[in-house]
Image 1: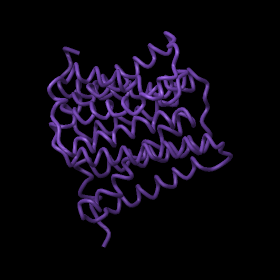
Image 2: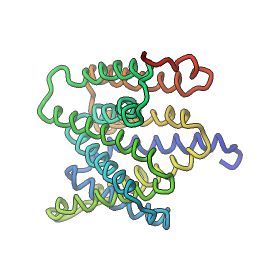
Image 3: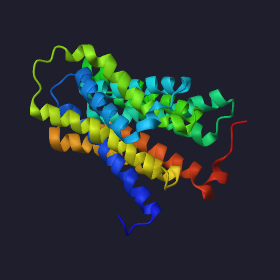
Length: 289
């Protein structure tokens, strides 16, 4: 890493974050705890690591910070619930629709016009989302899909809230979001009589690496590369998440889910390239009359 320039270090940092994030599906599937028990250990451990790493930064608080922390807590809980109830592919792809809700609600909040490219992206992504609800769905699959959609909505609200708040409060939002989850989930761990070593190391990995270290990598990488680069590199997570689950757990997503996921990820990636790349920005800035 010493021979790399700052930009290359940023790319590697964001890629490492996405790779760590992608491990969530397989570990959540393999851990025998229920969703709320996993959420407790995962977030309690992550909160401890954040307190150690970011120290005084987690003490910076304001009203918006607590709102954002609450939305982030919902993301964390709904994602684990979704991954336990439905396929990992459905959980991660439907959560990855968060940018679509941002495109829908940001113009309403900021009182700006909708751009045509965003309207097209939203329509295409919703068509992709419909495919997840086609075919024979068990009650668990349906609930899991709904949890995943709620995770996406909460993620969008968290993202919009983070934009509204000063960057100085970002680390504390993540810390308190994890802390909120741990507090909410305390009643669910009282029924545990023993913790196996396999469960212990996996929840520890989720807390230390999949949440805390991954976010540290991402925040450091974001300082060195463009936002568009970070957004595109982050798409490694939804692509690899179901791959690890297939290899390590044998779970095969439905054909419709794969097609829907490809449509959603492709639409978001293409829209990001067209709108955020300077050379293309002017060409695609037309707004609806």
